[in-house]
Length: 558
Image (tube, rainbow, N blue to C red; front, side, top):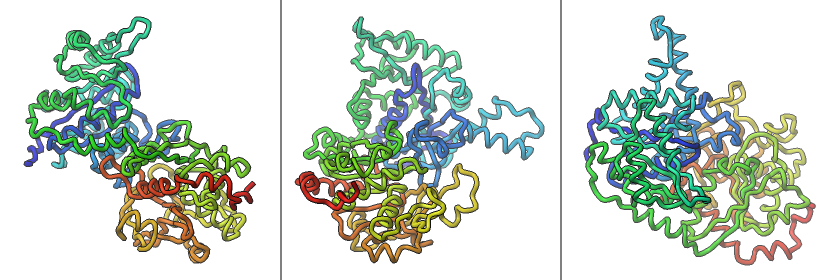
């Protein structure tokens, strides 16, 4: 396939109306998947209106998961959807925030770049937004760039982005751009009808800002009639075939096929005056969806974390379990367990019926002892275990306390005065005072040792995984750990940092310093999650009664 001339890269803008959280990211990713399946090189970027430079310092309760890219950018969780759907890595350029825009403009003003002019939202802020939007298109790597604008049309915060889109449409020409407006058709059960008035008002507001949407994607819980489509098209000044139904789906992975049925990709390509090329080959996606909806087995895995009230805080982990479950023809039923509510007296009742335990990443001391208690139960009762980042560090602390006998062992993050800081701050982190964007971030290499669970999962000795942490396994203790049965099965080849630990005498007990969930995609599930789910399947038969009836070592915890 010959690429388009860089000057004719097409841009698709996705806006939202009526209410937030309608699924702009999923619609963007679904459209991108269909265009990719037609032979186009596609990428997606997210413009976030908040003033934080990035979500790295945001509490997960505020914004959900912070997704990390290969190049070390802390980004919005929608970038995870983009990668999971497209199977293509994103980068810093795929996520832009108002904070980053203003930071750039203010820095340039301080440098004297504006030659004494008054710095204003128009043209200086909008020019910087436009520059960021066009960066991906200027690389020559893509034919189509989809730009999702966060928030809802009418929000004060998103006005500069909407104005920037208006200017870009004028500058590039309407045949090189398309605007998709995602809106809501509320259903009134008392009258039994879908209402179009909120959509009409949302489009009217967009028109007031100088933008005529080309496509309306209407979220609905009931099917749309042709009369309803015709009414929306007439009142909102769009073609009737550009009124797209987005009915509630049982899983986000069904949305690309629903959009294919609605011919969203054809409508957009016609607007951009691009050839339809080949029919999209979605067979692998359909096979995935078929296995997802028709599992042969089921396992129950406990996800132990401290942000479980907002499940988006662990979005990539939850999705990685879906991918790994399909790979094992298995439904993974996640039990969300708050680590603050786990204690030695009740841990058996909380975890005994699970087939596996994952201890999630996080920061801070809250809930740490509950995580350690859960890990001890999994270790002593031979329950398959996976620890990610802080989960791995808690596994190290638990082993130090209850196997090595270091009663006060801890991470120096939680207890700087511990006599046995088995987890300690990385040397290069000790002089850093700014919190934003200063952790060990992004993709780093790892050497995996043969004959280990990790090697069994990956099938190779060299891997690359994404990181987000300041603290590490304290190498001073490695010999003591390995002599007692916890081995380091993966190291960074450049600095010797312990990346993976596992137990010798356990069915499946692995802790990783990195975040494998960030690299799991629909068509390429992460091997660690696949092997972990396989281990829970192996243990699903008979292990519950074994824990209940056996006089386990965990009894000493009560």
